[in-house]
Amino acid sequence: MELTTTPERERHAKALAARLSGRVVVDGTLRPALTDERFPVENPATGEAIGMAARCGQPDVERAVAAAAGAFAAWATLPHRQRSTILLRAAAALEAEMESLACLSALETGNAIATQTRGEARTMVDILRYFAGFAGEAKGKTVPLTERRFLFTRRVPVGVVGAIIPWNAPLMQTTSKLGPALAAGNTVVLKSAEQAPLAVLRIFEILQGILPPGVANVITGFGEEAGRPLAEHPQVRKVTFTGSSAVGARLLHYAADKIVPVTAELGGKNPNIVLPDADLELAVAGIVQGLRLFRQGQSCTAGTRVYIHAEVYDEVIRRTVVALAAGRMGNPLDESTQVGSIISREQFERVERYVAIARATPGARILTGGARPDDPTLKNGYFYLPTLIDGIPADSPVCRDEIFGPVATVAAFTDFEAVLREANDSRYGLAAVLWTRDLARAMEFVDRIEAGFVQINQFSVAEAGIEYGGTKLSGMGREMSPESMVEHFTWPKTVIINYGTPGI
Ligand code: ADP
Image (cartoon, rainbow, N blue to C red; front, side):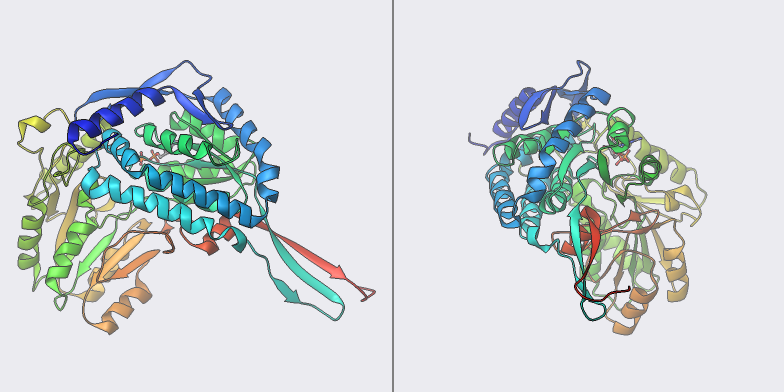
């Protein structure tokens, strides 16, 4: 099908949405869920329902986990090169459908195809392909003991992995869970986010032509109803999660009762600091990119606490405001749109709540944004202008909480020590960025900043091969590296062979 015009893309995505409605992918087949309950999936750019998703609960979880458990032994013992080959074919199959998946994801998330979902579809493929190449890397080690005794370790796949993902970048979230789990020899049941279940369903449908039945299963539904029974299921031996810190904590509780490990990639309130000697052009572009303008700020690595040295403050703010205003807002499926809509009414109202707190704060100023766009064609969607606010005290919830929308605080500083202290004075510890040409200052920042993902003179995102994860409330565990695959998706078995040392 041609997907060259906006109406063609829309028709295509809507047809897929209708076909996938009420389905799950379990044991190799796209099929109706066991539950008859459904909930609407919305196009957040228009407020229209585009399909219905199954409101799965315990019975659907049971069926999916049983399928994954049944597929485990054969998948785990498949020679790793065969697993690699299959996963490479799976990546190629997704690659062939990138454009279609980008359309469907744009329709249900409000992320623009031109600036977000198309690139994300590419990342989705890259991640799966990258981990496919590491299927043979789940290796143990040998350790010297005494003469005639040989110690080695083996890495053993954990079994059924329960994966729970959010809605902000569902294409790449799916393969960042599937890639390492499957390459290491596990089988997976994934629960998609209730706001964005359809493109994920389509990914799993595509994979079924290639993976053995039961190796990768997906269910849809809400957190407490579907996510919780999945995380608590006795046969789920590992939970991997991306989402809010509050839900991450819940999952640790569920897993605690059965002593099962959890990887948790959680929220952030990330500092982005501009020193006066920085290349200001780069820094301004980095502030805009850091705000995740093209994802409406809905990213856990978003640089939402911006600190700019007083010497360059006015200049940087002036240029940033201009750059933010240049982002064209519109229908996410339109090729000329750069900025789409917020995911849901709930998130939209959350953004409005925090902006209202800012408005009521004495001394605070909204430098840009703080409202919906004027464009009447956007009035039914959850569009919100990128917003910069200054004069917010460091202890205000606007400066402390993860808003998860297109809102950042900005503040001027003069003292590096003080700004470093303020940057670290957060419950979160995910990303942190510094703009400077001073190597010593940069290294000082690297040494002392409390964050898992630190960048100097760039504000990029995690990708295959760049290990990613946070500290403090931002979570535990790492993703995107072969080491994290081994650490989180296998367990070590220590073996000692005594071939002639008696009396030990
Ligand atoms: P966000 O704030 O990004 O929506 P959440 O942490 O609320 O993130 O949700 C991320 C994922 O976690 C979603 O798939 C959601 O359904 C799931 N989830 C929410 N609550 C629970 C829960 N109590 N148990 C398991 N999963 C949950």
